[in-house]
Image (cartoon, rainbow, N blue to C red; front, side, top):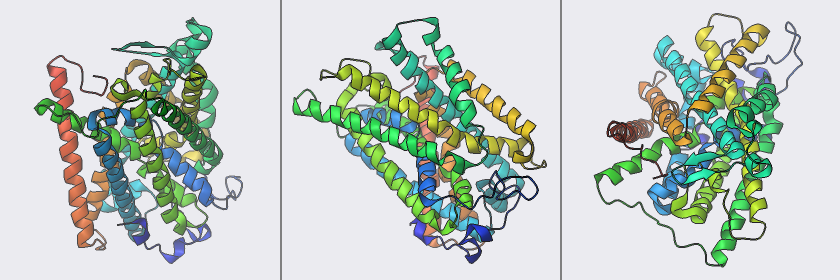
Length: 463
């Protein structure tokens, strides 16, 4: 099943022919006859690819090497490829049913299939998922710049390494300056295509991180300082078997981009290009994921931390190792800073739709736009200062909201089949997605709850 199965309606071939519905329209009106906005003729294919790729390649990539520690390289890479296939299939279902129901938002599609409460359920799921993801971004940025502590000891941050330990290198101060100086200005844009340049830059920074990591690993492979990694999980008892399922929420979270597909589609000059946008983005991101997982786990082995960036504070044993360590961490921290507004965009829209569903469009109310933006950034900031680990955040969002957005909701829409367009293959695939999603995440939640009640540390690759 591919995106190519989507049959766009003729009226959607060009942005100029799209019917605009207030609650489903792009956040910024196309032209400004009443509101005074500049005319917007549509986003480019390249800009759309960068925005969707940026939505996908966020913080999840940093936890993928740790999943290899649990699953082994063979099974881990296979799971990454399987998740990419299921993501493409679920997006194809969303787009096809959106065309049939003339829905131009994910919430509108859920409303078309399940009514008012279906739309509200989707909005709540996006809120939980995106809040969790953005908190993870801030946690990682704090780890990189200010350092982090684990059972292996304290891992110094970049600022600590450069200037020593001072009050202004502490996590809270660093995150406050980052929030006010970078997140707040970038979150003030009212159209997602306005972020296409920063999205392109963020993808470039992710590639810089990957290239440096590959280079370091190749050098250490040549000098023989890296051993052969495990290809399969180390399963010795029931507990270790159950622990394998705890990586599923992390893998699910790594591919969640469904909440931005409609926004990007709505802003495309030619919306038939959404097929190529999705396929190109998934191919690019899957390649980056596989290479990061492979070389990250090869480089650090069983010492791989939940956030692999935290591993880049030790002596790598190669020339210019300290410089390369800093380059890797700074490049990816900058990448996350630029990803933040792309994920924040649908978060703000869904919260506004949930709280002010009968009000005029958010873009026409500067006061409401400002209050929603400031309130959400404040919640994310405080969450990042009180949640200790990205694994904890990924476990929660991945096992709850992310799996609903990515697999359960698209499958449920297909099984509902309100417009009688689902094939037998669609329904079989939908059942498989629901069973896999529910089973794996119930086991993951059980594993974490069991560990909590036994007063031991939650299973994670850090152990």
